[in-house]
Length: 174
Image (cartoon, rainbow, N blue to C red; front, side):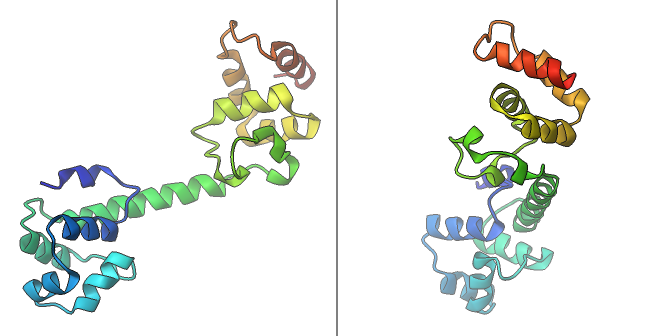
């Protein structure tokens, strides 16, 4: 019935529990009484102050009529893995003090750019509009090979700023 939430790792298990309670028109107090646990525990789960245990997940599944074994525990594990991967991706960053924020004017913060998922865009932007310091930092961060691979993949029909891009490739040997 609520299997769609299993494929949403960016959403915490507590937020999903809150949504399910809303859909079922159950209050935190009602589900706590039904499961014979303290209402504060439900509130702590929803707020992310307490982790789901396999035992607590099982009790909630029975109380809410969810047939997937370990439902909330699985959601929590998926979310924890998602958060861990996001943290790892964000730790490996270029020296942002060497990159002018104006190059990425359409983003609210350089820190919010997922540099792995948007590598093509970042590299192309830097090679079209960047200065020496910015280009050197991007080459250091991504590696000369990756930068070359991405720049080679830009379609020849993309002629906008091609002259600048190619000149920078020549200067920096990429």
